[in-house]
Length: 139
Ligand code: ATP
Image 1 (cartoon, rainbow, N blue to C red):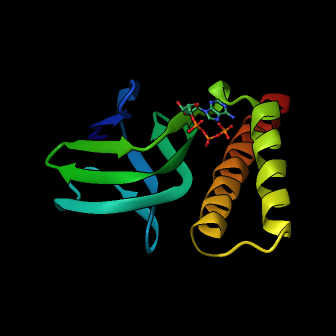
Image 2: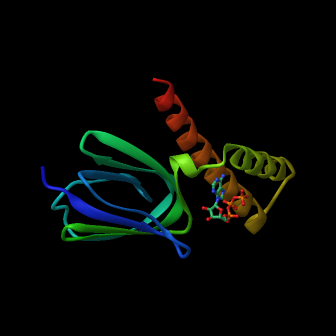
């Protein structure tokens, strides 16, 4: 089966760089599936789960938004933040979730509300990705 290279990078580090069979990324208008020979594309990503599939194995990562470019045989993700499932600190994400929920309980307006909503979304994505890994390890 043909594969293609994906590089997932942040300003700080290379998070993932492998040849894969398929990528599903959190596009702004829904889940974006990329298979080999996908047409060239540039798009914005929102906070969500990014899945890569390779040789029947699947890996899930948490992405907090960014850009995705599809080139011939190469996909590049420039992420604001990204963590592989096993890198996620669950207690930290849970603390971040509580902080954001507390901020949203107090009536917030404008940027403060948007920031708290974005922080909540990042935390929930991290918790969901970590939970999926935990369940998979139990099976
Ligand atoms: P927090 O409120 O917990 O700091 P955040 O989304 O605001 O969450 P930042 O402080 O901007 O995160 O992130 C700094 C670095 O820490 C980034 O490299 C990010 O990938 C990483 N990071 C953030 N939260 C977690 C987590 N729960 N587990 C592992 N790495 C994390």
